[in-house]
Length: 450
Image (tube, rainbow, N blue to C red):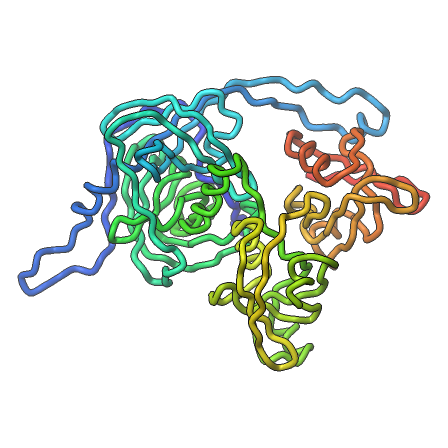
């Protein structure tokens, strides 16, 4: 029987009590010839006061699954019920003067009460400054004296093989420390978040580590621990963290605007693989292949064209379309960037000023993972106002659901939707099955997604 792997966010929903700190063995080279054995202790003594434990509580709306027969026969949808919950997670103090604490959105999502506990035992009621669900970042604020902040590293300078140390609150065991290396960079396409550009590490990350610190051997923050890959929620040596530079871009926007203002390039594309490169006769083997450029977009104004391959952003190599998408989105509206494109056998660098991401057009996996591979746009088709399916990739999850190019999504669980924003907001609030009501030409069709 094959073992089915699932991506599991590392938050622990329980009422576990905080226990004494525990530290696992650090897997570092051992010095010889009478030299003192290496230790992480001096670095950890400075860093761990800046890592906090987070307790949350609240009430979540829970709906029973929608029965498709109820939908078709017009039976009323079940009423949502509120059920109390509690949970544990981790966080990192990034500004001692302002009391800013960064964590994952899924740690505090829907919480009514957020308590931050420092290593010295002090507790503070935290205020939520802002969140970004798409990238799973949340910013909290506490009022306290003598706080310790963790210094941020430049995560763009990370290399595979660099040592990494994870600090967090797994299973309620506060300030647990584990060590490993950076296993990979720029991980994406994992369907953990809407925008992905993860650091992969083999430092042990378990449930409750979410929002905790991933630091280098200098004690500088290189990432925010976010998720693990495993069969049952336990550590298997594959953990993921949001890079510190990406986190800082998002947090700066939350502080300035109260929300994240995403940058947009205005292209549709896919990852360049060996097969596509050979078919197109390209000399390059990796990058983001541009299939379409939206008129009057940032890409259009900068001179990016369909059939270009974007190979670098601000001097950093781009290996996939998902990596490019995530980096552009988190850079923010109005940022000026340099994009290197491969065209007609040569590379050239273009200056681009990013525009704001349109809420009228979106890749459908931002709305629901089962719709990955489709592009949706608020609009009208054949007199039907709704969400137009602009395109559907062959053999994609959206194609398996049944979506076709030209469909107009009119309803979600019998509720009328007229824009991408409406559809996303409605689906975010639904627990269980979702039924899409679609106009296809003169016909009405319905598809169930889970």
